[in-house]
Every structure is written in C-alpha cells, then in structure tokens.
Length: 63
Image (cartoon, rainbow, N blue to C red):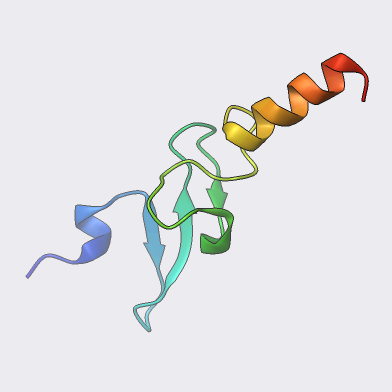
C-alpha cells in the first residue's frame, strides 16, 4: 500500500498520520498547514501569492 506522503510529495506527515508541514508551490518553503487555504497549494504568506502582491502594491502607493 502506498502512503499519502509518497503520493503527495509536498506534505510531511509524522508517525501519528497528522500533516506537519506543507510545501508551498510558489516560494518552495515548508509551512504549517494553517498558512494555507483549504484548496490551495500556495501559502498565504508567500510574496508571490495574493496577499503578498496586495501588500507590495499597497507599499508602493505609500499608504
């Protein structure tokens, strides 16, 4: 039987079968699961993600 970690290489699972970390597809860093929305593979804190682009444009406008 194949484990879920082998099927989805972006997930780290500990010995109790809980997801410990997920790898962001954009910035390639390992983050805790709560940094991700339910159906995404890009973290919320990612500089290339939606929130990162919003903060960059807000800083560029001087607000």
